[in-house]
Length: 129
Image (cartoon, rainbow, N blue to C red):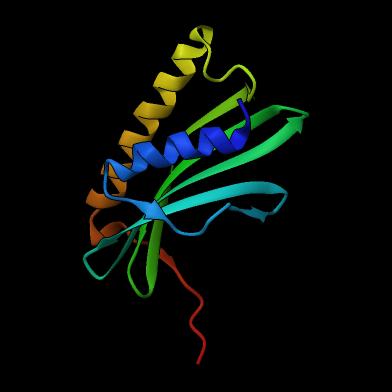
């Protein structure tokens, strides 16, 4: 199954939590592809990010991140890292454990990003005039 189909499946999962895609098609950042979904939260946003690095053709290392921010501060949390995911077998019966891990990770990321207290937003954005 092509990676785009996997991203569409994950988009369906995050939409159940009220998140929407931040951009169409993802973006290449630091050698990996990233897709981010966001949802309004208090004075900022909650984020779920999936980063995929192709280690060899058709095989990926994947990270699922949760994050939240306000206008000046942010927090990020690595929810899960999955290694050696083969895109052609992701949706076969033998990979049900991987699908389950992704579903659980999306659920955890959604809960974390919406419930992390403002006092935990310890990262600071670079503010320019």
